[in-house]
Structure formats: structure tokens, C-alpha cells
Length: 261
Image 1 (cartoon, rainbow, N blue to C red):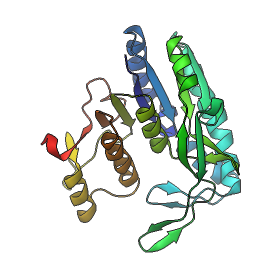
Image 2: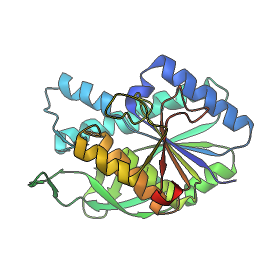
Image 3: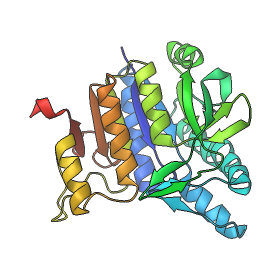
Image 4: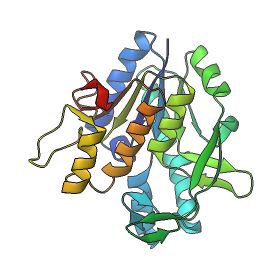
């Protein structure tokens, strides 16, 4: 059975109600012998720790600029507090999980991201990785032995070493490499919302472009949806934007290929 890949953000890890809903769903899937791979971010925790240490946070369209100080904060939060908190909470539900990052066990190999042109300006994102290779050997070994992989979004490059990597991008790359049929991107908002502030049950590429033009798709939802549609293009059958509250029945926003309409 192909694994389901679920990406959760740091804000969900620190939200007791959302975390309980997610772990109840995970426990159910585990009892049904459905393999699940978890990719997590730590954006909220990095923001809090950066503020505490007086380190400026800079983002462009939801993408974080990672200088050396921010990278150190990322390593502490991603490989440390957030990852281990998740492992601890999962164990309270009687489940077996292994907490790692995508830099472990040769899971990912990356290069430093080249500057991106955003609104006519070239933005250097610093110590941010673009994944070139994925190795699923260790992940498959965990799944075969009924362990739940919990993977933080740090990657590794030959010339620099550890790099920050976008959690949605890592989730997409792993979902494709693991032949996942379903990729679920969990957010607190639970869906994509239209211009009238209504949740959309489905969204195709054409409507995504319309949302960009009209401004009701903006900020961090832009790269999230770009990643979702790229996942579909590369073989993932189902991509759903949802929250822990809508996870069970997938009542979030399902991304569609245009021909599915």
C-alpha cells in the first residue's frame, strides 16, 4: 500500500486542539495498516525564537530568507524542539515514530537556491536548498517495520552542508519519490478561500491563475499551490489543502488537473 504523505506546519504542532485531531487521525490510519509519512515545518517557532534573539525575519511571497543566524535557529527548532515534541506526542497515542530531517540517511541532496525574480527584483534567499536528489531507502525501511517517519525540513549540500528547505517542497519531492497517491498539506485555514471569503472544494490551474490576478490568492498560499499543482503534474493523484479539522473527510480544497473538470 502506497504511503500517504502529510505536511504539517509548526503552528499546528503548537496548537493542542489541532494536534489532537491530527494524532487521532494518525492513530486511525496506523490501525488500518495505512503507511503515513509526516513532513513538518517550524515556521512559527523560528519566528518566535528569532524575535527572542533579536534576529530580523525577512520573507518574500511566503518564502523565508535564511541568513547564517536564521539557519542556526532553524536547525535548533527543526531538528530539535519541534521534531522531538512531535515524537513525544505521537508516542502518547501508542504509535512508533522516528524523528529525523531530510539531511539524515542521505534522504535529500541539494544545491543552494539561485536568486529568484519576484516582482522584478532578484531575491537571494541565502542558505536555502533546492533538492536535486531524493533517496527513499531509509524511509522505506522504516515503513516496512511499522515506524512512522517524522521528517523535518533540513536538507544537505555537498559544498555548504545543512540548508533550510521549504516544507511543502520537501513534501512534494518525497511524495513523488515514494509514489504516494495522496499528498495532504495541512494549514490552519483549512482550504483555499475565494474572493467572497468562501472555502473552495476544488481548484484547478486556470482558477489559480484567476485568483492570482484578482488577489484572493496571495502570500504563502502562492508557493503552496504552485507546489501542489507541480505534485499533480509529476504523478501524485490527489493533493488536498486541509486542516486537522477537515483531514478525516478531506473537506478542504482538492487540486484538480484542468481536464478533470
